[in-house]
Amino acid sequence: MTSQYDQGAAGTGAMQARAVRELAAAATTLTVEHDVVGVTTSLLAGCTRAVGAAAGGLVLARPDDEKLELLASTSHRAHELELYQLQIDDGPCVEAVRTGQQVAATGVDEIGARWPKLLDAFEAAGFAAARAYPLLWHDHALGALNLFFSAGPDTDGIGEVGQAFADIATVAIIHSGRLSAQDVVARIRAALDERVVIERAKGVLVQTSNVTMEEAFDHLLKLSRTNGTPLGQIASQLIDNAGTQD
Image (cartoon, rainbow, N blue to C red; front, side):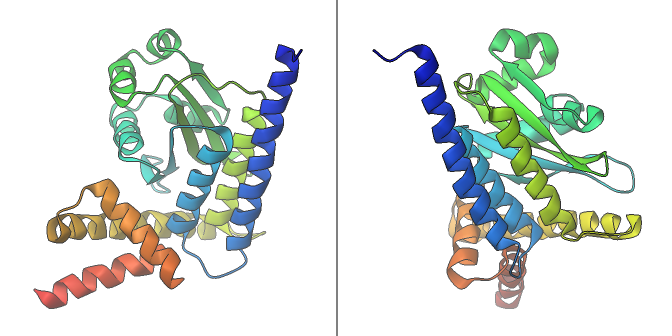
């Protein structure tokens, strides 16, 4: 007879095995030419697969005023929920950046108690649990990686796995061992500027191809993977081509 302990251990082992595969794939991308948004989006997708999350998002703090901006998300539901958190300046991602600590909430009661303004948005998105992990660089939170679950996570070890992905995301953004403070600021600004270009490209696809924003982003990711070209470059090319056709 299998005990609950055995079942839990098996679940944790399976999650850790998935995490190893996804982290190995992510580490490989850092050894070749890459763009920050493309790599962090792949990391985010890998993290959601590893821990069984329904969706994820990643936010960065702007260097000039520390205001949070959305860098990547795995679904339109996560995209909208992240933007709402940034709009009201509250929620798991905001708390993780402010405190530099992991944030966890499971169930509508806990979510409603901690972030009352977010409860309706969580329920509308179909999420019943959240985890947020700070992107730490020299003890300073540059942003946060956020995971959303349709139900409470069933396995132990999610904290370690989620933080490992957040740490790799930090390395992908910084991509160096010893950088000056000015270099770090420049990297963050470049990543956020790149995200603006990708959002513009998504808008072009929505207008020209009659697709949703989520479908447009999936199309850009597919083009990036198929052509072996950084996501930001693909987005710039699409915008340039649209301008030429006009």
